[in-house]
Length: 497
Image (cartoon, rainbow, N blue to C red; front, top):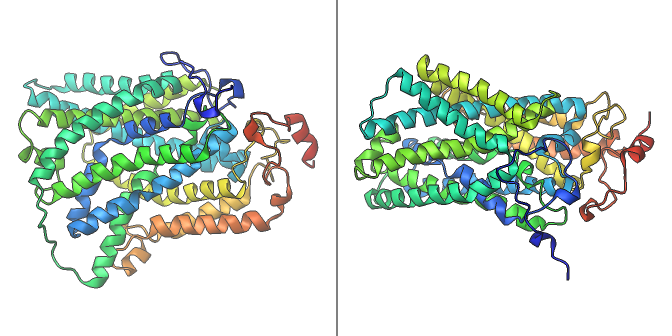
């Protein structure tokens, strides 16, 4: 009796540099189980940033129970990230290649690859910088003096650990993810015991006017949603699964891998905010942790930043390839790593105050990422998750996804319009849009931006001429069987000159 697709034998390629990049993964190389996705996403999301975001909700002046509810609601965006992951097994290609269906071969270099590289580099720089600062603090707690020379060594070691794993690629990430996830989770459980014991469950926020209260609730939702909205690359880690794998399982394990740690750690941040000053939680938490546990907490920050960077740098390397740079995937990771390390060195040694501005820029990027995720998710729905991985890798003028001049305007128009409107709704420390000001500071961009983009894209997709071409309508053959009835030759003959 043959094995089911989800029970396909694992191919142990851990410890070997992955040879595949943005190219199509043939059925013979598909392997694994959806459950592995849970550990991949959990290892990247057992991170300190969610602890900080939880504390921010209390700093905004929200009541305890409302802050906890927002922590759950904002992280429901992980369901969308899980939904997007099903396009990986269907196409056998990473997210940035699937986005050619939404923007065209040329349009995707701007709205997919270029934006992906910029956002990826932002997060790589932040992770390296935060991990370096936390390592320096950790060394100080154990009595090791840190001069500029040692800081350089720390930065280099953090960079090598972050990008070294990504250089090896998919197999190594799958192998190490459960180890990292388990270690980080265990540390946070111990920290959580003391945070829970010190929490003030009778905490009362100062009363607010109704309009101000609703504004802060929406702002808090936007802050929490910034976590899952920054991940539009879920197909990168599911594309090696068999095409016939359970879609429900892919969605579930991907979504839970991000949702569970984000909610639990965010809730700990909320509880900590009732008893300590969360304007500087890395220092203030020492007041409620025993002396022996504080260094462990700093270690969690360091390791969490590194594991988050593993997925970030892996996907950023794929984005670099999709730009048209003729470079092996491993070297594309090294290239982005060198750039990120240089920028991080500037922040560490020359412009530490710039971290706040950079962090605000990341928050502002949600106005772009939300609409992008919405267009992607709606496209999966409209096409019934039928993507021809071979056709997606064809970047010639005969490509089914060349559309008009290499651009697919429904996707481009939807994102541009939604982002333009979202920027008027943003409220963060770097910029406050006029609509946010009119709504007493309410930031509705994480809701309105994706909604506008998704609805507009669905309308344009259904009503414009490109919908009638082979490149835009759903593939009528069952790609999920692992066989592609349509070859590139067939595609070329079907597309009108």
